[in-house]
Amino acid sequence: LLGCYFIEKNDDRILWSYLIEPEEGHGFEYLQTSKQKKLYSDNIEKLKDIVPKQIDTHEAKKLESFSITRNYDKDKLSLNNYFDIVTESEYTHQNDNVIYVSDKIVRPIVNLHPFIVVSTPGYLKHLQQLGFKTYDDIFDESYDDITDHSERLDFIMNEIDKILLKSPEEVKSLYEENFDICVYNRDYLFN
Figure 1 (cartoon, rainbow, N blue to C red):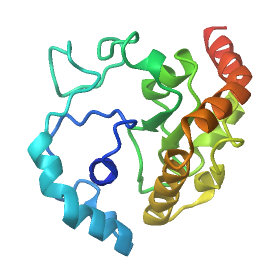
Figure 2 (figure 1 turned 90 degrees about the vertical axis):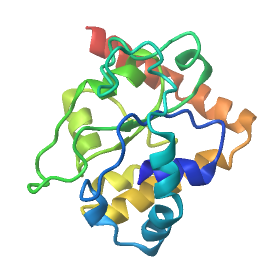
Figure 3 (figure 1 turned 90 degrees about the horizontal axis):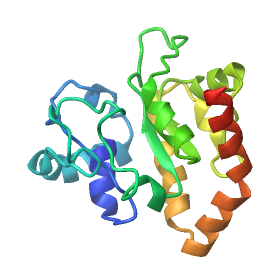
């Protein structure tokens, strides 16, 4: 659904990859809101047509993986961007108390990027309990408390929309205002 959202936005400031063709039943059972149903119906065939979409995996040997150790060109991508949208391995789980933190969160931390995370409820709180800081000055992080999967995704997409509405100067300023958190997170991870 996030791929459908990116296609609909058609904004060259959003750099994203999508390697495997979407399959029915892979999260689509959570399409509840009219916004999500429309995103899906308007864009799913376009998404299927572009797979594999490779922005950051041009040197990957096996395209079924996003392993962070081999799938991006830091000089061309990470140094030219301000924010990351992290799509964690778990978004829905039968037990919403399960928080699965994978290596996906490492990339924005190492690259000094503020991030918004598409994951299970409580993910950001879990990161904070581990000692990391998050970016509530940039994003309304109350999405982390939303247990309804469809509602949480709509909220996250609205937060991304808010960033896309900002001028390049405003985006740069937000980044600079939060750079100390980026440095703190990177140093905390390395330590």
